[in-house]
Image 1 (cartoon, one colour):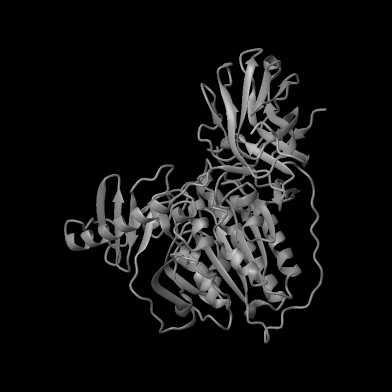
Image 2 (tube, helix red, strand yellow):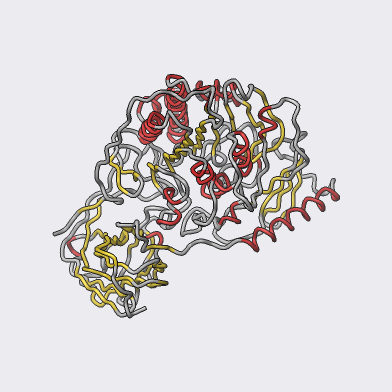
Length: 594
């Protein structure tokens, strides 16, 4: 029997919450932490940053109630920022370097801030975009989070009535995704209100595809914005409303004075729009690509202030360890510094420091930047630049020829740092499967290797992309995996095929094993329309058919899962979304075909 799929698999998970008593603030020494991270929201996408055209009243008031780091820096792209934020390290040291093709994966051996909280007895939950590894060892549940609701990929395809992941199971949701994630985060807070909790909320808005409820979009269209900016500003206003819901909830539960709430974003704005006159957007190593808002609110303990010292995502882990009276794991070498003194005291200072920025690319290139309290030094496309960020915050005048001594000093610092982190970089691209606690495994096409004329539908190989133009028996598709323990699986291929292209045979090989099936049933539904406001760069969502291929026993160790076609019926095999492996039972002995 054929089964239809909207990847990932759809089922409904009900989450419950009960009425509990609030924490005893007088006796607790471990404050709660709510860490909110938005995706592609720039420094200028807030009203308080002199943007008179956007409505973000909740975040504006939060900034006034908080200690705001005026010069807070992250990485140019999302997965690198997340790896640095969670580990306290520059991202190359965690195995992360890019946003797809496995280069977004953070090494599962990294000790995350969630694991530190978890080991201290905190309830830990993540609600939103993970983007540091989709498979078991790098999954949020194996990286310190008791509960995870969201998605692991770099973006999601549909923001309305979609299917998210709850731990290792699908969760069918109703409504707009930012509202849904907020609902789930609030439920987590309610369930854990009597003990310390760490609630990580990495919203995926305002990252594309640009989808937002009508009332937000229409507000900005009425103000004369183009469709993209109206969608982005609408998404930011919706985020603001949801942050308000979170703050109202902790106030209702009488947790405000014992809860640290942090708001920050993961990189510069995803497009040219108001950003305080700074140079650069998302992906850039200039100021506008990496300077983001960062507010830290803790009523009664951290007083409202503006902090001029430079700070970065790598500092959040050691700072929270101190603020929450936790213990840093012995021997853990991080790059960030503890900024709790700046938050708690109006007279505290930090020693002179440099913050390094590396251009995020698929290959390791030397382009990057150094930020001191005054200067930004940049190496980009063979050019060397120096900007006085106090006298020239818009980076209009390159002072490299005027300040050769400063250039030499910062170039030497960057060169030493770059060589060090490059030497420590070990990409974590290998797909690891076959763990006891795994039941279903999905290997998507965007993680596959392929030969010949086969190509990605979207052209980029970003998350959710699939393979087309399989037109030669000489071509193949394969996944390289590392199997932890031998198991037997039911193998199926997720595909789409027009009626005129049915009849092709697919053969799956691993070691000496071989399975074969024929695509005999057509399945080519239209794309799922997802309320896009502009034409998207990402691929669309589609319902996929499943072609069962039989039982497949995977041996322990490195395996090549190869798919070939000895017979193409009518020009092309069809479109391939990925493969699904459903565990049958553990092997009683290791296969002989290792």
